[in-house]
Length: 93
Image (cartoon, rainbow, N blue to C red; front, side, top):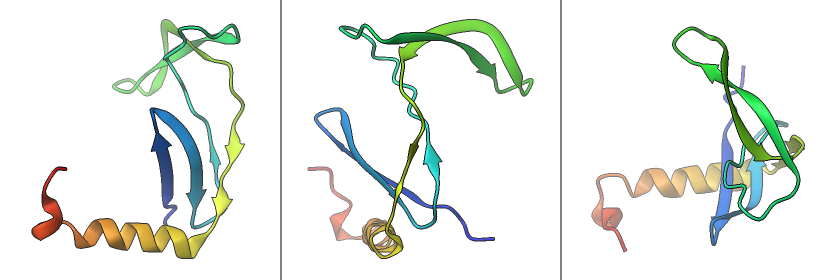
């Protein structure tokens, strides 16, 4: 089975693009709801118990989206980021 790899491009705090090495769907749960009128209240997930939680929270009402399938670009960015681990380009700019 192929490992699914996703690359998410964010600029100015906004998601600009999501692409993957294989077809995938992504659901963005945006909890920064100030100024939005399309809100949805959803139940949280209890990761310890592995079941839906009684707690709820509001998110922007968005639909799942398909990623752009561009395996070469995904591999390129993963390779570029891996090259910087422990190397001279590890500095924060």
